[in-house]
Length: 248
Image (cartoon, rainbow, N blue to C red; front, side, top):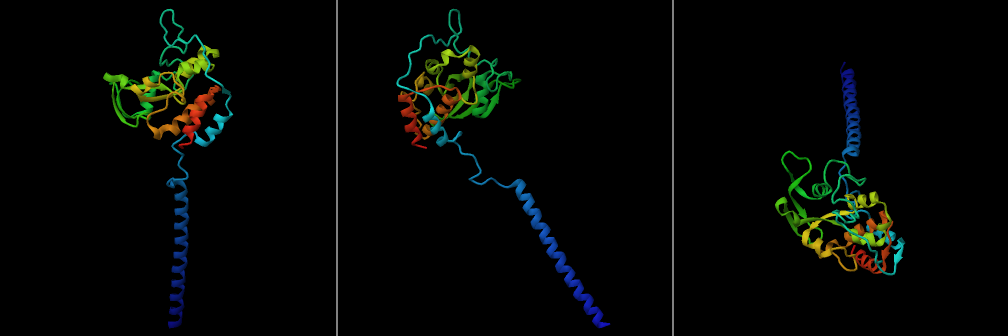
């Protein structure tokens, strides 16, 4: 009787050990499965802040057609008033094939909404930005935007309209130029107003952002515009961009 009881006890211990092993295995399997779903991104899996990749874009810059000098191409007029050429269409038009086109909002407001933080919209509007904060890439300062002082934040065409006109946009269709002028994905950047005015229609050999920490990103973005729109690069501007890429 006592031996049967002892055998029964041994069986109970073995059962407990087996169940424990199986349970631990199930828990580990569950952890492995859950981890694959909600894994925290590692540093290597987070995309670089410079997009597209600077090294790849430098290679694309070197593949562009290089001009000995910037052409002098007449005919550019931004204005759309009577007797004006309206070379790139009405300013900030939503009626284009550009990214965010036909979304019911003006392009300027699209850029402000997408590139500023703490954005406040006009009451009853899903488009009109009346306030926000901009970490200005050109100066490195923070600008607290208010619509009452709208010119404090301006929308820059990274490769200026008159500049791309001289490089070949004069041969594009009107629709292509309109799309370029409102390309929120590649061409447009919310920046400090005075810095944008100082830049004017200059290429990189004549103007670079005062914020040296932005030089690499500026070169990357500027080159991305030339590549997307299949534009050549003047030799002096190419040299300036290569110097900026060296800071990456």
